[in-house]
Image (cartoon, rainbow, N blue to C red):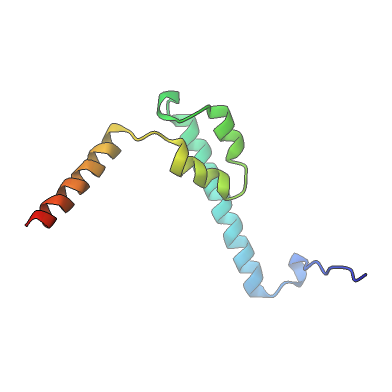
Amino acid sequence: MKKSKILRFKKMPPVFKILTLCLGAIQLGLLIAALIDLQKRPSEQIKGNKLWWRLGAFVNYLGPLAYFFFGRKKTGLEKKEETTAEAYEYSEAAA
């Protein structure tokens, strides 16, 4: 049985090193943004339990993205912008 080859960071080509660091930075940025948003946002504006969303945020890219797309309730401003955009599209279609 052949041993699988693990590519160590030191032996990676420079392009892969840069790509790995960029993806890591994006992941860390999403995590920090989700945790800050969870800290500042009141519980009434979050779907579900804050503790579960905090724990879920640590699941690589999926956790923070799931929180941003599914975990937050729409605030009044977001609803107003959505309604305004729909009204604008409707008026263009009617014209």
